[in-house]
Each structure stands twice: as C-alpha cells, then as structure tokens.
Amino acid sequence: MVRERIANSIPGIAAAVPVVGTAVRGKVGIPVLATVFENTVHPPYPVANLQRQLFDGPWPSGTMTEHYAEMSGETTGARAGT
Image (cartoon, rainbow, N blue to C red):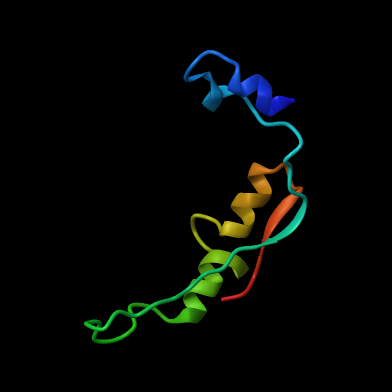
C-alpha cells in the first residue's frame, strides 16, 4: 500500500515520503574489510585501531556503534567484528 502511494504520487516526491514498517532493532552486523593494495608499502593502520575506531572506542568523534545507537534512539547498534 505504501509503495503504491509512492508510485502514484507527484514526480520527485518519492524521496521525501518515509517508508513505514522497515525499522531495524537490535545489533546489526556491518562487514568491514581492511584491504591493502598491491602498491601499498605497508598497512596504513593496524586493524586493532580500526576495531577501536569503529566499534570498541573510545574515539574522539565517537564510534560507528555509538552513531547508529544515537540515530535510532538507542534501538539499533553495530555489532563489533573486524
């Protein structure tokens, strides 16, 4: 029903119409792939730093886990694992 309403609406309005019923709750697994290219002399950062920056903290600008929790009103968070 929501998709029909969006399809039949004014052109360009689809981006402004929220899709109801698609909320996610709990921990969400987000794959993080640390890659090194062929011409890289050495890894630019240790994977442990990436784990801390994205998931574990503390990090000056906050972690990705904290960001998702804040955006969702504390109903969603990122699950750690690099």
